[in-house]
Length: 294
Image (cartoon, rainbow, N blue to C red; front, side):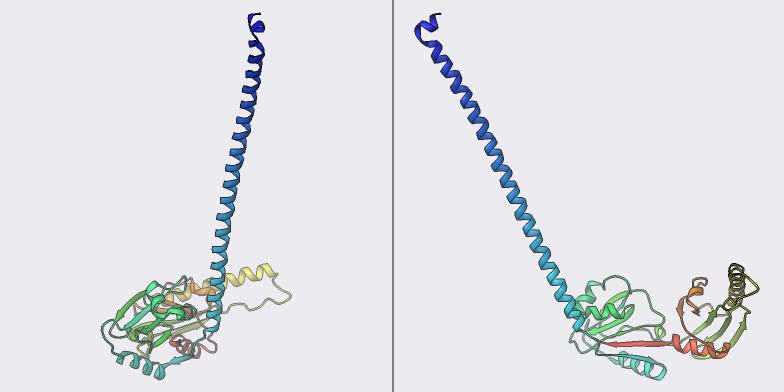
């Protein structure tokens, strides 16, 4: 009553209205500030995404450029060498002498990227090393020598800088005493060697069924019988290999059968003919080296 008489009631109502308006303005201000913060965050996110996309584009462009350069790179020459020619090349490599750590020799695996030292030494030619791998890669610090050799008896991977080419002729040539066995599903032949001289010979053939023909056995029965014949043949091969005198063993032949044997080296070869001819052909094919000039 007194407030109304003094006019304070109207002032209080006005104060209340202004306070409500202030709260509304404060809420609007906070909402606007939040909107601005959200807009800033979105802008920053967009800028970061743009930067990532630009980096990705640059990376892809770099990959394309490197791929195009690699496609342009080709081996200066590829040669299959054996026997006298191979010995001559190995002799030349043996005779190379440089200053300390002037020659890099590396046994590079076939899977994955070559070691960093190989990449640094071969630079843009590293892609050629990868194409030749697994291989023995050789280069010098003057860029005069740049080759890769596929060694029949590859050593464990290594990388070394030296004053000479670090290689062992035994990686490429038949040296010392060893047994060399050829295994096919229908044939076995094994020789025991001292270097290139064969000192013994063992061979036999098995009556393993060829392609299935109409009549007689069903396809399923035919395959089971053939599998049993091959299994019996493999056991006979293992027995013959177990009777060898040499500790070192190389097994070559039909790719699907090689996993059945434990040897220091295995390779699929296409050797045909009678057992002795097939063994000679397989021996020659195995001790053949692929030379890549880069």
